[in-house]
Amino acid sequence: MSEELGTVPLATPTIDPEKLLDYIDKLDGVAFAVVSREGLPVYIRGQLEREQAEALAALGEEAFRRIEDSFGRLGSGRVTKLGLDMAQGRLYVSRLDGGVIIYQASPRLADLLAEVIERLKDNRPVKCGNCGHDVTLATYKCPRCNRTVPFVARECPHCGANIDVKRCPNCGSPLRSDGSIVKPPKEPVYIGYGASVLMFGIGGLALALGVPAAGVAAIAAGVMLALGTTIIVKRSI
Image 1: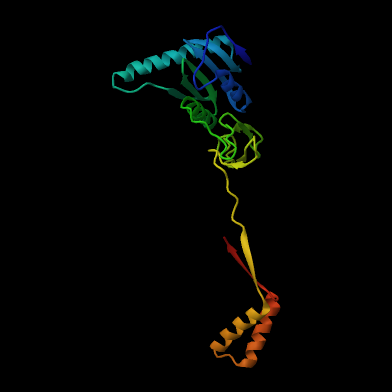
Image 2: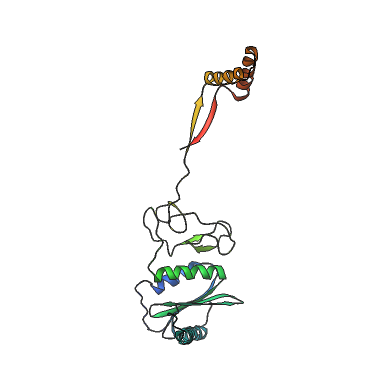
């Protein structure tokens, strides 16, 4: 279900509510999302009836007001988000400038969405370290469970797979979930040492240990047959 209600405007300097809800729509595991202003639902997404959305919108505004009234007497700052664990999942109520977003999802996914929304509110986007493409509201399909999750997730919130490294949807560079570039491992350098060097080394060691000259040749020949005519030394740079 996707619905726009009324004509109450909702605009913030950092968040486009329609863009945010379009992003949420793409994710697997979000039960519903409502954006409200002044206690009235403006946008509804997910399996939620209008009457339920209206009740949630009013409840969200009232919850913020009551908590701020109570904690304000203690000198606490402004409340920006509330979380409530329910049988159906985790319910978050988060302030937007001039409004509120209410959504319900599995606990790990709900927490990820809360992080994304806070980044948007604080104007701290996640960008590709190579091309600068904004991936804050990008999505990613988990290769293990095939569910669509936030691009910024380090682990799949559904199956727990490690998905920290992904490719930028714009330039294809390998990125971590914070946008930093994944540097390729250093290439090893292979150095070959010829048979004469090997023979010299084995002969010197054998003589130093007091092995008779006749035995030196036998030892060297045996090692050469076992290893071939070249020793490969692997060294990273």
